Image 1: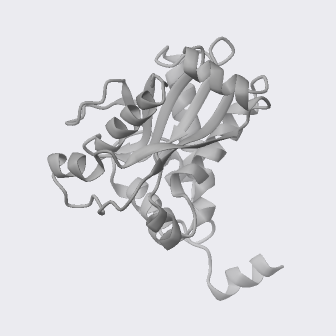
Image 2 (image 1 turned 90 degrees about the vertical axis):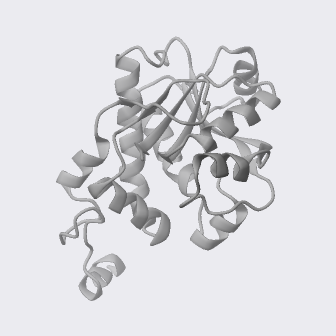
Length: 237
């Protein structure tokens, strides 16, 4: 009832194209899913990096509405897009079959100030959705989300920074966090699998530009004895 009243006062519009009716129309949902793209980056990211496509058009509008306009309902569409990308990468053999090698999704962390400003951890929220979608058709524990990283201290907004400045801005700022796991019934087992390499570790981000954030995440995981196997993003700028 409250949702219906809200729609009468402020009709829901698609975040991608502005058409009235739903938060994400069918056309923009299809565009958001895109197709797997292997990304070449200026930063030294020592693992394969993939994205759903290039940043722009409807995908840019949707991501910005989600991050900067508080449209948290878009986490469903973003999470579904990442899940579709991962399924396609599994089919292509770029990521192992989770039945054989379980997966651990590690969201790139947001700074404390960004979380306060937005009111939520924007990458972790849609990664939760991705984890649940992938897990729905797999044995329990085949795919988990592990929040193993956090941002220490203050970092500047990366918009407008050069590749070198982005790397300098992030250097040493991403560190280990108290491990939180979504989707695994035995945290100790998940942690052990990540440490011994029997669980495929994937860093996930929303938009990859120079690769500075992903590179720093890989280094931070290495400092706590975890090898990153691959990285994915919703879009590559």
